[in-house]
Amino acid sequence: MQRTSGSVVAAALAVMIGGVQWAGAALLTAPGTPQAALAHIERGRPTLAPFSYTMFCVRYEAECRPRRAFRGGPVRLTKERWAELKAVNRVVNRAIAPQPNELGLAGEQWIVNPDRGDCNDYAVSKRHELLQRGWPARALLLSEVVTGSGDHHLVLVVRARTGDLVLDNLAPEIKSWSQVPYGWVRMQMPSDSRLWATIGRPGA
Image (tube, rainbow, N blue to C red):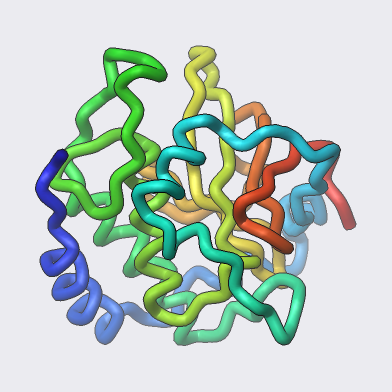
């Protein structure tokens, strides 16, 4: 198993969150922004979770434990939350050295905060860090996409009231889901992170 660097990630985040400024979030709701860019992803029918996710839940039971939600729906992206989101995305992207999985399904191990890893490790690490900071699980959805080259790829989708945002290890910026060059396959369901659904057309 790879050695985790959770303490390094936590220390870097503590410094960065304090210095991140409230900038760029206004672009998500600026006049003239296409409505499609603000839409939320519409889920389709229930589907099986990736097998690697099932194994991840065996290893990290607490990450998949159902959490009682007293309020539903997307989160409000406050100044503090925007700073936290940018910091987590940046620190995790820098903390994990890229190491492509060349063994296919047999080599997939979704690990939180490893020293080296692939897209799966980045996505679950970002979700873990945000959960640790009090973000609701219903707004942190692991999502499987397909890249232009046909590779399957995992990203973290954050459900904000202004629209679904993508945290991706292949890009430094946080973008609206409609602005990333991917085909969408399936994602976790907000009501229960252990359940997944196919992805349909954008909703209102």
